[in-house]
Amino acid sequence: MASKDSMLPLPVSFRSRPYRIRSDSRSRHHNKFELLLTRARVTNLGLLLLASFATLSFLFNLRFILSSPSNGRPHMYYHAHPPYSILESLNRDKSILGLNHLVVVPGHGIWKGSGPEDILDEDKWILESHQRGGGRIPAFVKHVETGVKTTLADEHALLVFSGGQTRPSSTTTEAESYLRVARISGLLPNDTLPFLRATTEDHALDSFQNLLFSIARFHEYTGHYPTKITVVGYEMKRRRFTELHRAALRWPQSRFYYIGVDAEADHRDGERQNGYLPYTRDVYGCHDLLQSKRKSRNPFIRYHSYYTSSPELGPLFNWCPGPEDGGQTALFDGPLPWDAFK
Image (tube, rainbow, N blue to C red; front, side, top):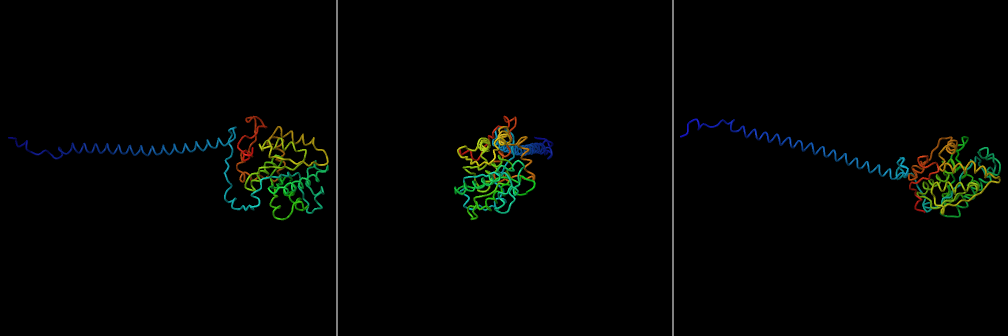
C-alpha cells in the first residue's frame, strides 16, 4: 500500500513550471524570429528600391551619353518639344505647312530710310567704313530682288532675310530692314499669300549663322525642316557657303543652290583673306578672330530662340571643336534632322 506521502498531490508550481518555461522560451524565440524576418523584409525592400533607382539612373545616363556626339563631351539636355505655353501662342496658316524650299538672303547693312527714294541713297544705310562706295548698295537691293523673285517662282518656297542687331547706332535688325526694302520698293506684293512666304531671322551675326539660323527659323516658322536651300548673296562668297558652311552643317550638296550677285568693285581678295581662309581654319567660327567678330556685332547682347524651337539642333549650336576633337576643322558628327535627305 502506498504511503500517505506518496498520495499527496504535487505542487501546482512544480507541475506547471516546466511547461510554462518551455512555452515562454518558444514564444520568445518565435517572436525574435518574426522580428528578424520583418527587419529582413524591410532591408530587402530598401535594397530593391535602391537597385531600381540605380538601374534607372544608369539607363538614363547611358541614353544621354549615346545621344551625344562621339567625342563624349556632355551637352545640355534639350526638351523634345517647346513648352506648351509657347505652342499655344502659335497659329500657323495652312498655306505655309506645305513649304519645303528655304531661300536665304543674308544681310550686310541696315537700311534706315522710309520711302522708295531712300533705298539707293548710301546715307540712308548704316554701314561699316569699308562698305562705302564700290556699288555695294545696288548689290544689296539686287540680293533682295533676286530673293523675292526666286521665292515667288516656287509656291513651296519661304524667303528668309537673315541678320541681327549688328550696329550699336540702330536697334533695327539687318533682316527687318531688308524686308522693309522688299515691301516699300514694291518687290514683295502686299497681298496675304506672298506676305506669309517672307519672314526674318533676326539673330545671325555672320555668314555661318546666316545659314544655320535660317534653317532653324524655317523650322520655327513652318513646324518642319526644309528639303531644299537656295542662298542669294555675293558671288565672291559662293565658295564660302557651298564649300565650307554647307559642309559644316552636313547639308546634302544635291539640295543646295547658290545665286551670286556681286558689287561693281572687285572685293575678291578681301573676301579670301577675311572670310574664306579664316573659315577654313575655324569651320564653325567659334574661335579667336571669327568669335571676336561675332561679339563685336552683338552690341545689344541678344541671343537666339532656336534652342527652344529647334531643340534637336542644340548639340550643333554648341559644337566648337578643339584639339581633343581633332582640331578646329573637325565636323560635327551627331545626328541631324536632314540626315535622311542623303
